[in-house]
Length: 228
Image 1 (cartoon, rainbow, N blue to C red):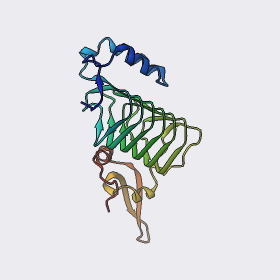
Image 2: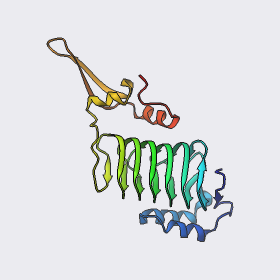
Image 3: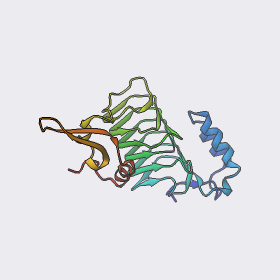
Image 4: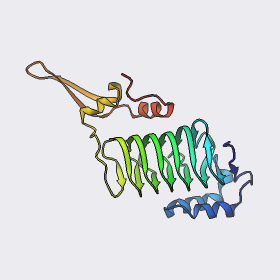
């Protein structure tokens, strides 16, 4: 259980408080899903957790592990470790302020109304999506197939591939077949094709991410993607 979070199942937060908070969702679909879930939540494995104010997690925050179908933070969210959410079962995060995390791996529904500051930002699959109302600042951004709506600017030291974005200014990324990826990923994480030219010169071609599961694992554990 997240400290300072009130549980809907335990009658620590009212239906009216939840409904008032989810009116703030920028995408109507999410509010509809949560409203429908309120009547059936007792049959869910997960709960709706509510924090009226800022929340600081001194470690990792995994919504499924914390038992959160929906986590509402009416304020800023700071996660000293990795933040993760899921698409099976789907989990939701609503932050009305800014969010800061060491790293983020998002497969679920992530919504931050302010800025998102993160070391590495990884999207996972395309069943759900992310909405950021402010700017994103990241060391590395790999959206994979996940969709991101960014109302502000994207400032990332490294953008991998061509992320699926709704944004005013598209970032310039390193294409997935660019050997420059070897500067940021260990060889075993990439699909490498090696050959030799007629003059004996070695040829190294890159053909995308080969072990995405390991990429996510390293990011969640705080391990560098490039170790040598």
